Image 1 (cartoon, helix red, strand yellow):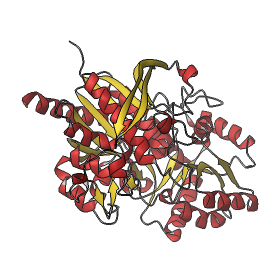
Image 2: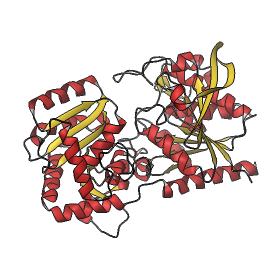
Image 3: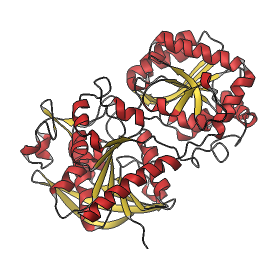
Image 4: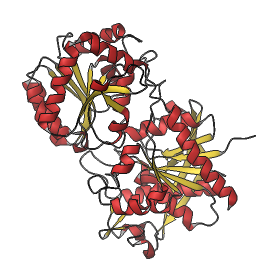
Length: 479
C-alpha cells in the first residue's frame, strides 16, 4: 500500500538556501516524516542555489501563472537529495536576486509579487499532482491556503505553520490587484491590516489547521505583548491552533559524526580539544577560561541591543566571547568596535555553516538573550554539543531549557542558565551565575554531559504532526 503524499512548501530549505531556522526545519522535519509519508519539498530556485552540485534538472517545460492580468513565466525543476524529492519553482522575477528576501536592512518592495508567483505555481502543482495535504510555512507561502479555497477542483487540505509572527508579509493595498485577488478579500476577516494587506492572515484564515513552533509561543501570540497586532485575529481562529516544539536533525548536528570538527567526540575531553583548536584560529586566548558563544542573526529580536550593552562589562570578566552572524549594519558597526576594543571578544560576520558547528563544539556557554523566541534551534544544537545555553525565559526557550538550579539527572530535558527579564542587570546576574557554575567543575561537567546525552530529535514532535495530518486526511475522506 502506497504512503499518503505530502507537499511541504517553504521559502528556504537547507542546504539549498538558508537565512534562518526555517531552512533547518524545512530540511529536517520532512526527513523525520518520511517513514510515514511520501514527502516532497518545494521551494524557489534562487540564483544562489548550485544546480549542478545538487543535480537539479528541468522537470516540466516552461509554463506561466497569471496574476492581475499579467503572465509570468514559470518552470519546474527537481532533484533527489538524501532520499527526499525536492521541487523547485523558477521564475526570473522570483529567483534572480542577490538576496532571498532583500538586503539585511530591508525587504524587496515587490516581495508580494515574487511570492505570489511562487504561490500560484505551487497551486498549479497541486492541480496536476495528487497530494493528500500541503504543509505551508510562514507568510511567503500563506497565500496558497486562500488560493486552494478559491479553487473547488483542489481537494488538498492545508496546514500552516507560523515560525515567526514578527514577519507577516505586509504590503500596500495595490498588491491585492497585482496578486489577482478580488477586492472582497480586503476586509478585517481576510487580508486587510490597517489599510494594507497582510499575507500571514491568509494562512491563519484559510488553512485547515495552524501550528506554531512551541506550545508556549502558541499561547504568547494570543496576547498583545507577542501578537504583533494579530492577537485578536489569532484568538478568533484559536480552535485551529496548536504549538509543537521544533526538533533538530541529530545526524546533521552530531558531535560524533560532524565532519566540520577537528575531533568528533562523545565526551568532554574531545570537546576540550575542539575548544583549543577553535581558539587558535581566533584572537582569543586562555583555553581555561569559559567560552561564551553567540550564533545567529544580528537583529533586535535576538537581543542584540541587550548583548551590545552588556558586552563591555562582560569583557571585564574572566571569560572569552565569540560571535558569528549577519544582520543590520548598526549591529555590525557596534560589534566591530567592541571586538577592536577588547581582546577577549571575537566577531565573525556572515553565514558559515561549518564555522558555526566548530563554535558549538568549542563553547562552554551559548548566549541567547532573545526578546522573543518562537522556538529557537540554536539552544537545542548547543545542548546537543554539550553546551549550557544562557536564555531569556520566553517562547520556545521555556519549553526546551530548564534552569540548572533545578537539575535532575533523570530528566530528559536539557539544562542551562535561565533569566527572567531582558534587562542588563538580570542578564549580568545570569552571566555571574554561569561563571560560578563553571568554577564548580564537577557540577558544570555533570550538566554538560547530561545535555550531550539528551534527545533533541524530531521523534516526539513528528508524532504530533502526524496526528494533525491524519485528522485532516480523515476529514477529507468524510467530505
